[in-house]
Length: 495
Image 1 (cartoon, rainbow, N blue to C red):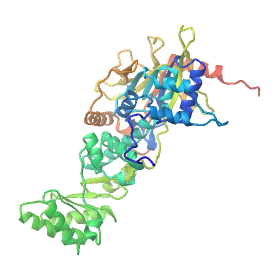
Image 2: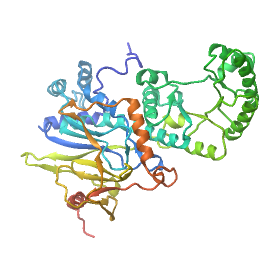
Image 3: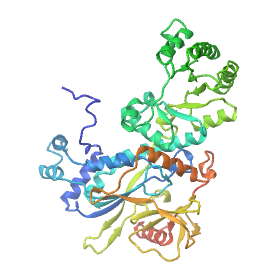
């Protein structure tokens, strides 16, 4: 009998939420006796999404939940034991499976708080601990942090375009499956939307839920006025009528007729929704009709493949829209389907425990060459708390008295740091030896933090077209070490 495809999806153990090569590498480390060698990995992205100037960190709460419950169940081990190798025997020996059975997560984890604005090359998460464990969690951390950071960033951009207007997330029906919908609703709320149509997200995360009705409601009745009247009877104080099933402006007139009947009974129409056509023109005409009829407070809700650039355009055209319903473009993070976050090994404890071997991944492109060390992100700010520049530095090495930031992609771009410049360290302890040491904020608190963070950025960084590049630099000694390590590791071929 096949297992339930949905209700049984989220079992207590999610240890198999990984790529096979993480498990094969774990076995290889174990077989070589390297499983307990101390390692440091960083999770980061290289470039802000949507050709924008920043991203909003998200997904940490999911990652913490995953790490707290990292253990291999009997079912997990039975499945791994059933995997065949090329010659038909088991891929993994029983001794290794017994090792996994007794595995307990004991790493240190430092992370940037959800809702914080972040930039390319900055570690969002740093994992330090036994090599096997730190390697094994790579895929899960990436999928949990990448997607929510992407959607939270999209939501922040939509929030920027909408200004003080209400923004609703309507994307569940177009999301990439149930978890895509649920994670997107959470991340969108964190990034700045006001409510969601996703009832399960409302239940699980405490997000306000909002909705109207579909065209099928209108089509199920004899005519549009009858449909509106029936909906008003069901929801006398919570009605928003979808007016474009047949003719939009006639629909507005029908809504006004029903609204008069509602007012006579002591109730008020909440709003109308436009879901097609020229939203700028139709919203202006609808506003004029509503105002002329004495319904100045009836909101105009708009939907139909909206995103930040279209919202900006509609506002420039004088659209009279109070509430924006954003669906497909938000939950699918149009037009960038993935953040491109990576998880790279940056340090290994020397076998004699005398210090660290710092590691680097080279590339033909400097932008894809990793940064060695045990990295921290220091954000320098103005006296009013506005971000000025970020510095990546290696906490395993002492900082010099005089600090200079060097652009990792252009060594000629340098920025000295004032000795008295105010700053804050962004990576904070989350786990120590596998034990949670940091109380995570509520989703509402992270949402408020995100709004403060985004608004603290200079408008030139927040703009959608050709945003200013926020300065993120390597501390000078880290830059020098990285350059020397590149020269050491790169093969020297004669011309």
